[in-house]
Amino acid sequence: MIRTNLSTRPFYNERVVALWLLGFLLVVVVASVFNVTRVLQYSRSDTELGLQASRDEARAAELRRSAARVRTTVDPKQIAVASLEARQANDLIDRRTFSWTELFNRFESTLPDEVRITSVRPRIDKGEFQLSIAIVARSVDDISQLMERLERTGLFKDVGKSYAERVNEQGQIQATLDVSYVPESGHATGRGGEGGGRR
Image (cartoon, rainbow, N blue to C red; front, side, top):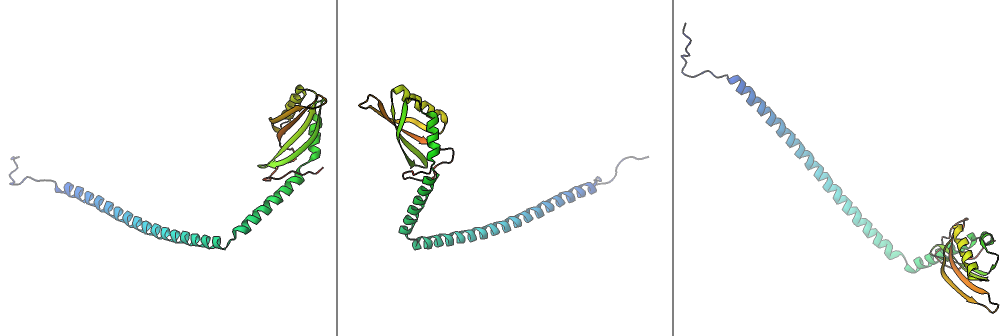
């Protein structure tokens, strides 16, 4: 039996190569279709964003023109008058919310025996009640004791920050304390003016 290959050209299995080439071609086609689809989507999206940006810019320009028209129709004097009236209204509200009774009850519970208050002047500064308290005491220690008691209440701030004293003809010490006061019944909301009172 002869086992020699007598053909002039060797036999190759071309079916495997053809299948491989077909598979590669399918991959290329699918990738190309995907890329083209994405490019078209991005192009549409870019066009829509461009149109939206143009609309937004036009709207912003229209709003700027409208604001300019409004500004030309507003009288600065009217704004100043309205602002002044608002401040005056706030001051009136603050005066009515200031409770002298609450303040004097607080003084009664903190005042040392050898100290007496001769006058209290409230005012509103930067939205807070400021008190100028004039007192007469027998000694500096009595004044220090009053200041410590006021601070311990938590309602009086910056006690002794502004402090002046002198000795009168009777040998007593007259002093003036400027303190910030935050009443339990509320807080000043005004922007200035002298505090009034309700009892």
